[in-house]
View (cartoon, rainbow, N blue to C red):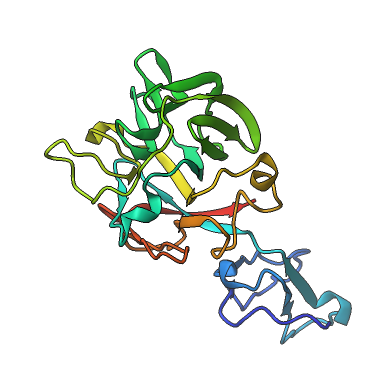
Amino acid sequence: MGQPLLPEGKCVISEPNLKINKGASVSPSVEISFNGLEELDRELVYVQPVKLADVQGIEALDSKTSVYYVFKGAALINVVADLAENRAYPSWKDGSIVNDLTNFTLECMVNFNQFGRQISSIMGIEGNFLLRVGDAGVPDNQLQVACSRNLTSSDLQFDTNKWYHVAVTFDNGTVRVYFNGVEKLNGNCGKSSVSFGAAHTNEDDGSRCFWIGYSYAADRYMDGKICEARIWNKTLTAEEINAPTHFYTVDPSSEGLVAYWKFDEGAGNKIKDYSVNGNDLTVDSNPGWTKVSLP
């Protein structure tokens, strides 16, 4: 057929031997499953033929003994991390790459399991610049940019069990918030620059550092799933945020990309930084790894 075959081991047939009882008009059912599809080359189309190899007792038409499964355009995201009651942090090799930023962008994909607590933390530094959900007087499903001047809007409310791409841009104090590529808020946060490069600490002494899924206290975790978390040292435009596939993947060598955590490991508690800077994350305990198919 011209297309490459699906690699060996990715197709599993639950029961390869079937018997049709005398007088029956249909055969017993058989389950055919596929695994490891995230490892496929997304630029190729694969085919998996399934054929009746040995038919006894009846005659079968050749055209009825084979079926072909075609795989095209594998999902861009296949595995994500659930950070409920967990948290992740980088140990910066050189914190200066994320210090004194007058222009930057924070972005990620998030999917909340549930709310019900006053504050849920996405990423940033408490008392500096933090993306969090809820607060005193703010609904527990509503995004807030906590800075010198907190910014929020009823247009920034999440539903549970739904994926959102969140991008927050900063330009000398001017903040813009995008939900799924649509600008929902803009305002001034009261700072002209922000630093994220503080050395890591568990904050027992009150010092603050950069976290994903945590801020200030253990009960402020993010009860939900996350992937494609990025820090840029430039203010992304609406056109850049809405570029094809940008929500789901970017080139790790992109200009201005200073940290890029895909959260696609599928095991363990180390999260690779795909940017050139290599500031991997450590998660306190192994996150819940969830298989997905995005977009």
